[in-house]
Length: 333
Figure 1 (cartoon, rainbow, N blue to C red):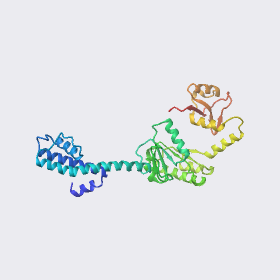
Figure 2 (cartoon, rainbow, N blue to C red):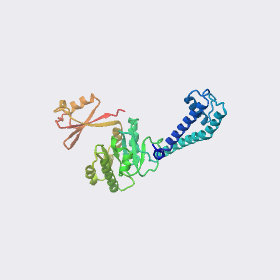
Figure 3 (cartoon, rainbow, N blue to C red):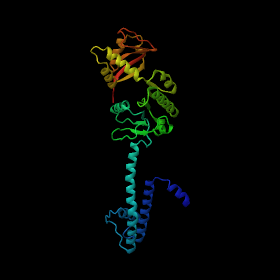
Figure 4 (cartoon, helix red, strand yellow):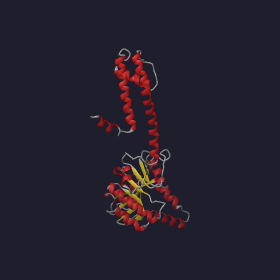
């Protein structure tokens, strides 16, 4: 390797690595020189290197001390050169640590993990979702992509923040979209419903271009855009307007019930599960299947028959072969 090749490689290294390598070489050089100048005081090269590090760091343990004039001259040169290098390295290391933390909070650092959940868009809904995910699984890895927030401290929100446009491949790849386990796209509160839906659908298209398998859960505000979201590749469509309108309807017509609180607590504490009816339950009455499933802590709420959702049917209602059972079970962290 000639000097130009060495310079090409060396000066492309991060500054901390360059400083460390330089200090290492300087300490080895001085340790070797002092070993040959005073072999009785420094029996091995390692002893010389140890003395060089301690002297350069101005710690001065005094376990190894040069006695000759030449040895002390080497010590003076080491203090003047090596001490400055070590101090500069420590300063740079501290500055790099602070800078890395700032870059993290400003969303500039790429995420390197896998099997993580990506949240797109920061608002009260995604904040509550983040809290609930971490409550049930404190080890869950969450990555947020948002372009409206400029800074997010990890101490306040234990998630990895990526500041940028979620429709841009560059920022999706910074979030390591290729190995994500799920993506949740929240509608942008700063835009009209139609604009928010267009943004969400464009985000779905961008995600599908980078990962064809990852499940994508997306909020769609207007009925007209649901089919477009499905065509774009969304796995699950959430319709918050339909949900809230139904709750408002229940509140308007309620007597002494509390439908909103009931649904919130049900969704908070229960995990919904859909599965095809087992063979042993075919042609059995609803009440018998309800009892058998409850033995395993599953609560049978109803069935999905073709496109019909049937909740709380008559106790003698017979289940059929193609039915999908709709059940709930307590969250188990």
